[in-house]
Length: 195
Image 1 (tube, rainbow, N blue to C red):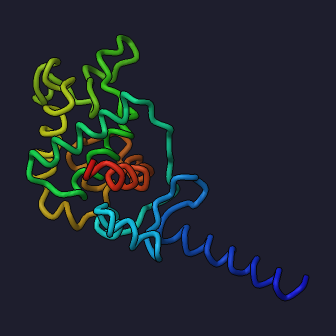
Image 2: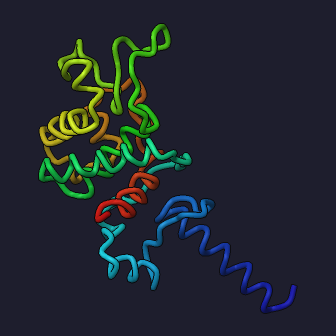
């Protein structure tokens, strides 16, 4: 192997290792930069800093889905409700990652026999558990504010890994599944926080 090609391969391998540890997988086309000139341009463009959105780095392998127009509108609704709740971008990341896990950002009604008890809406909240009426929990603004109210009650949530903060509010049977959505949630907040 010639020297130039060897340096290129080693450089790419080093980048992949660094990217995997610090910023999640780099195998998706819309990865948001966390360092370098592109990150500086992002900050200058008024987008939130990735260090603030993902202060502890992502945990585990990350998942990503393509979003349709309705799902993007739900992202925007979650961000708007976060701002109305006087909470910051990190709270929006936690909320969006939670909704990605619970409903893939779809405002789900009652799913009949496939339903988990009476769970509905973006966060799969349950009327029987006191989250609100069916009409309330299927309203994106209401359901987001309800989730964020629960998050505010978690002591030190800002310093917790995302999955622990989300789990403390949601009390899911699968507590570690929230972590897989942190990178996509952060990318969505970075893209839509100021739009």
